[in-house]
Length: 398
Image 1 (cartoon, rainbow, N blue to C red):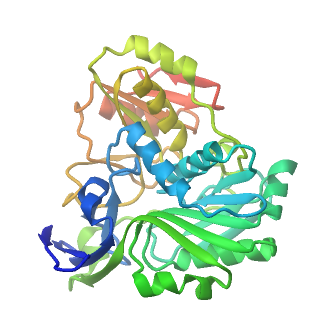
Image 2: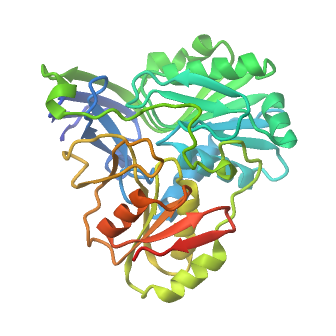
């Protein structure tokens, strides 16, 4: 990535990716770009590049305290509004980010009512769902569950504003589709706020959000600008041998847990303090520790990482993903694992090499299975099965 200075307030970056040329113009946050963001190439015929966040806890290891600080910054940008606030996080990448922003907002607004729910690619229960498409995604079909609890359902149907959370905004199409679906369900919604780490929609598109959504719409982002991508003249899917990232079956049981956000949460998730205290005694001071989430199961692992960090351990958090990314640019290593959700789709872990950490703690919501044991053996990791936020069992791996 080559930086070029700009005489105005903006800064420009350009990169020659294996999949094409990416040019970005930054109008906000240029001074912290390298701290917050990297650029990567994706094995994706629809979109051959990736704005890779370094504070998301997905593709890049990050200290829990740094993630929580980002959550607080984004929560502070949410406009004041009347009535309950509905926070929706986008699967899979931004689930942890969205739940963190929701919790930071709750802490900053004691006594206010809000609901968190995240979109998902897995069905839990038999209740109503809202399905929509994320057109540029590697796994485009996802949906939103209707909460089953009376209080949570009342918050969704009584919300006056929505906060849609994702790691980045480039076209806004997915936000528009989801907001429209929510407004059909709840016509009393009167404003939308988009909360992202990176807004690359450009000034004109950002200024036009209210007209596009049909109700007052605001944007909160740490980095803003616009981009241009010129795809290389290669058949990306064939050359990169990109495997499908979704074999969708709405009725299949995947072991996804309904208690961590798919059916709605109106409170803070509790950290497993008893487990953290035990692990802090078992892990040597000075050891490098990776707390690893799995797929859509992200925020609970971040809370465990934060509890360990608060006890003086050298901790980073991250998550596995099904997004196929090339080893280039901001991605230095790539490991492949079987899918612990049972769809037979490759899962990846980026920027982690075997033996890099003294302790690896894998947090998962699905029951123990061969895929998780495979990951544990590759990483020399311990497995922790979250049945509830307070009931976490260590799974033997030998």
